[in-house]
View 1 (tube, rainbow, N blue to C red):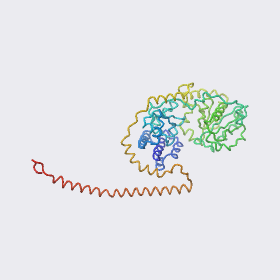
View 2: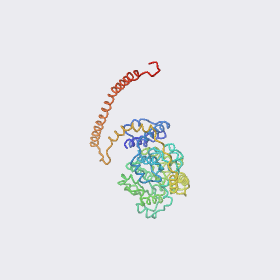
View 3: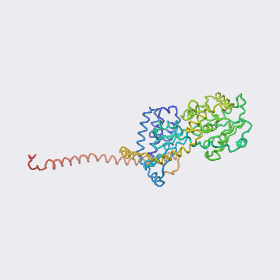
View 4: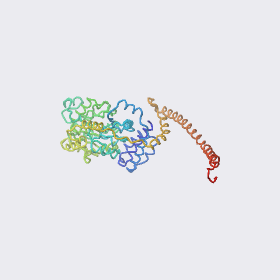
Length: 492
């Protein structure tokens, strides 16, 4: 497993050597920190490669992946469950262990579908390292990503639409606007602007809080009373609330931060209050978050303000660029606070200005089969068709894979010896250093014993060769040269 994860993590890093990611150093650095083995750190010195070279390197790593044995425990699990089809999601997590499930199912003749879970999965996560029988994506843009960035065969990609958002199209507010404003602590006599927080990776809360304060101060300093007196609701990301728990904007007028604590976003109450927030607000502002997509479903104006603090996770990500109007998106993006406030004033006075852009985006990005057509039944039909047609024939294991497997065993053993046992407590500081030194000594002793044994065997080689030569010479002298002549021969 340590070797398998090293191979998969290396693939996840190598994909970011593609020149299309030249302006996305944050994504590359995340993979470097999380999954690139330290003994392959020299790869990080490469700025970028031509796409053809990246693809060749990825194919070589895929060959290494094929040399890893299929997981016996996963094979036993699938045998016990006997599924008609296996669906894995999202498969593109860094160094994902779901690869073992796909390979075991393919070896057992079980058809496999990879279901892409979110709008950014194919551009800022890991690589699809193995070919499933089908890959379910939201739209044609994601299909292109699967083919060009992950090497999936086009006929294996199924466009189903964004089924995670189906419930947003039928939902209605769970309470009245006045009750909602009372719950979150806002006056209900004026429109309010909703700021939706981003994840830790996009904008850590300790950086997001001062950014939001500066944004609100800009609104309060405006000469336009619509901005100066607007109420503001800040809704932190459910998994990024740390700095928001103590943030204080009471000096900035009608501002509420709700909810401040961490919560489960898929809980019914959380979904209902997020929907209410989007339904009753006049406009939505954010850095880079999926709540922008949910706002588009409700036809709300959405704006973003570029900041040097978040440059790597705004335009430094491919999926954020999809939200720009010039790329078929709907988000008004400003490069300065002055430009942003002008845009915000315009959409607050006339929200219908952006309606055509949001409708176009929803129709192409979320529901390509028709805005009125739910996506979940389309995905279910695709799974049923895959189960009925069965798996594609599994490629026979190559001789090169078997040879690689033998050659990999020493490296796999060394990585295994250097990996902490499952459940072992994590160490830090002096304890970690001491444990690392002790593990290094143990590994060194084992390596030394193996090396000494190998040297002993090598020293025996000349003796074996000389002995074989002596035996061959003896055989020639005593058997071949002394063999009796055949009857009628010339005696030679």
